[in-house]
Image (cartoon, rainbow over all chains, first blue to last red):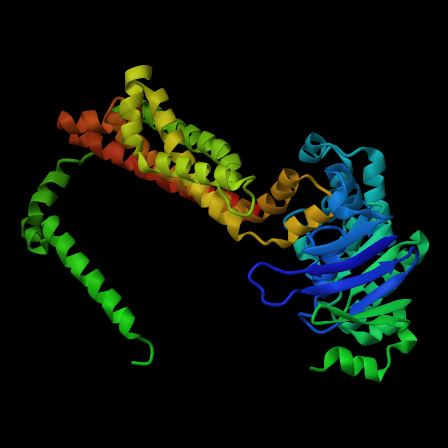
Length: 245
Length: 252
């Protein structure tokens, strides 16, 4: 479904590319965890999938069509079919839980409808259902800055769910959460993943979480793919290779 | 001298030289305060206040507030979209960014008084040219200040809006405006307060309001009315500052 063909990314002014000649593909139903040290290229990799980060060389393909060759409309389609969650949640401050979740529909609606907040009753109902799905027990009208880290990430997941995504991307979604909350969030991601038969690709620092939840692990080092396999095969030797100098 | 570097001494020296030079140019001389009692004599003529014209002066004060309010409100409404084009991170194109920045700088560089004088030739005397003069200058000032707030806003929500497939301008608007809104309100109320003082100056060129009354009372030596004018001006400024603070508190 998603294919990287010889992808490299070189940031302006950087001596070394953030991603080097990466070729990999992902299929429907896979729950992939991406491991690697800070600066290994994990975030760049995740951002290349939905085109937030343009590639310098190579191609990223969705269903055999290159992102670079897509029309703006097709690119928009890719983005709205991709739910993305971030380390710092990236919620809109001073807006409520339900308002933040409804912004997940921005890609589907006309500009004036977004501007005026014209959401029909079905859409509002979907936002409330998304709140239920992520087991968020706060008032939908509560401002997001008053929530805990775990609650904020649940709002971010609900925002992604309302997009009705085919692909779920996570850029260190549990890095700023305590271990217990991190595990609960991973549980939620896995459950959603199974229910909706998604492709989920998630950056994570915690190898334990990756081994517990992933169906496939990939490891990056200095922008290069050094491991691609099942969690069982991610052994101490691979761990050492991934995290040591 | 752990805290200071040699270069900082050089900077202090330049500042000191500039200060001394400016004092010479401005005939800055504190010994001139020896004739302080003249001021006392002058101020004593301001009292007792002549409150007979208070209702009329109150109406003129309301006119001044209206000039300042409209000047700041329309300034904000026009500056807000321009500021998104004047910010590096949200501008559609480098040329649009440069042109908008230049336009805002131009508006800022022309004082309201000069705009007022120019507008008099078309719009005649009265509060309307005063409102337009304040609007024009406020577009320049608020546009620059808001564009700097936009540039300093957290990029995270913008990235999230791109990721959901929102159109760029909608994403920017929703990701940034809620972040900067309390500061935008602060700037608005500060400019409102400044606009009250500006509209007093515009009263000198026939802009109307309490400023024009102050000018007339001064010119005709009616100092007991001058004191009423000054009191009303002080009340207006303090009131705007207080209300602005309360509204900002609510918004945050």
